[in-house]
Structures are given as structure tokens and as C-alpha cells.
Length: 375
Image (cartoon, rainbow, N blue to C red; front, side, top):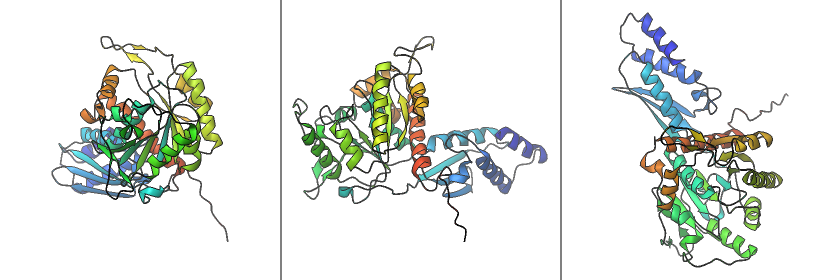
């Protein structure tokens, strides 16, 4: 698409350089005509503010309603390659989320709470939560993570914060810990690693509420809650008493995991929490030598479940040794190599989550119906 636009301009210019006005007009037209899942009506249609600055390079500044830096970077690279003149195009995005939800102890600084759920343990939910949080940050958002798995907290290990303890400025609210800019709170920061948390349901739910509401969360675009697996007390407390914007389901293609994931979708439907979609983790294993994909836990189970339940398939993640090693050592490939293959997969899913949240819940979404009142 871009090649046609730029080649036409070049032919009409008789090899002369395009003027600044020409370049800006072509870029504007290209952004207007660009189409993708996140931009069904073009980039400019969703931007809250748009400007182009041209000096040695071309800088596009856009204010977006959800984080999408990665896709706009790819779009800028495509535009750069099709330019007749040797000029670099950069896109700078800023995210402005509408505040739709609030927490008692956060002074209304948390804009959107997203529950990350799995029907059973062992599907990589916590690892996925942490990497999605880093991916949302790489896309331009301010993010926090709350470890709601009271019985088996793993967020401290995944963030490389084992043994760390939260502090308090005013003696009332706990200050969340920081991991590469990601704000985090977990019962694992308060209880010794080898101490078993033997609590009945009401006690666990009370502890979860305290972690959520007695933490001094800074201004966040998204707070991801790593929920314990299953559909027990904490899940119901979260769904009924916390202003959750939406939920994300993590599963593997295995039938037993899919059956439990369906129960989670049913639970969220009953308590009227929107499900943004399904993430199929451990979808395949890619051979390091030949690149062949082996579907160890089954094939396309998450995709079929998403279609059956009429929700989005947000993405498919491989069974990858680097993801496992990073989790064990409290690291993330997204921090070390934000443009690498694994990081790109997580960032694409993060954009899909943010985009789905906007399209489903925001009044500015093009999919939101409008009401015309005739006088």
C-alpha cells in the first residue's frame, strides 16, 4: 500500500526532492489509510492528538487511547523504506487512558484492573502475567502487578525480588516494590518463603483485599492481578467486590486445561466481568535446529475454545526454554531484548489486550453504539 503512494509522488516529481508539505501530506494519508485489527479505521481516526515535525528526521507525535508503540514502530519502518528520500521516520506515542475504575487506597490512581485467570495450575499464568506487564510497559503504559495467589505466591521470584520487604511512608499504606519500573505487591513480600499460608477462604479473601486496597499504588494505566487458579473464594471476591475492568484467560491446548478455562469464562460471565480473550500458552515447541513446530500439548485448543465461547484469541505463546530460564532467575526477555522474537509475541498480545479493553469498554471506541435523539 505504501509503495504505491510514495512511488506515485516520486514519478510526478521528476526525481526532485519532495517538499516538506508533500512528505507530511503523504504520511498523513498513509496513517489515515492504514488498516489492522487495532486500527480498523486508520491510526488518525483513533488518535487524540496528531502532529508531524520534520527536521533531519521526521517525528510523528500521537496521543493514543491505548498503548501500541510496537505496531506504530513497524508502520514507521515501512514508511521509511518506501520513501524516495533517505529520511528516518520515528513515532512517539503517549497513552491517555480514561479513568473508569478506582481503588479506595490508591486515591483513584489506578485506571484499569485486569484479572489474569487460569482454570488450573501449571499453565504458566504467573509467568504470562509478568511478561505481559513488561510488554505493556514496552508499549508505553504504566503498569503494576498484584499477586493474588495467597497460597502460592510466585511473583517475588518471577520479578527477582525474593526476600524483599515493602516499606511504608505514612504507616498506613504499603509502598509497592519496583522491578525495572514495574510496581508490584505480593503476600510473598510479607510472609517468609518457607512459611505455609494455611488460611481458610475468608482469611485469604481478607488478605487479598488488604494487599489491593492498602498499597499506595502510583498512577497506573493497568494493574494486572495474578489470580490463583480455579473458581474459589478469592476469585469471587475479586469479581464481585473489586472494580475489575476485564479478565484474560490463560490456558494450554490440552483438553483438561481447556475444560477448566471454560469454567472460568462462565464464572466471569455470571458476575458480569467482560472476558477480553484467551491466551494459549505452551502452544507449540519450535525445534532449534530445523524450526519445526511440535504441538506437545495438542493443537489449536485455545483457538477452538475462543471461537466456541465467542471471545478473542489474543495470541499463542511457545514452550520456550528462555521463558522458563528467565522465570527461574527473575528476568524477562522483554527487558533484555524488547525487539526479539519472544518479546515481540508478548508485546503483540499486550497490544491486543489493551485494544480489546478500549474497543469493548471505552465510549470513544468506534464499536460503541451511538444514540441519536430526535426532537
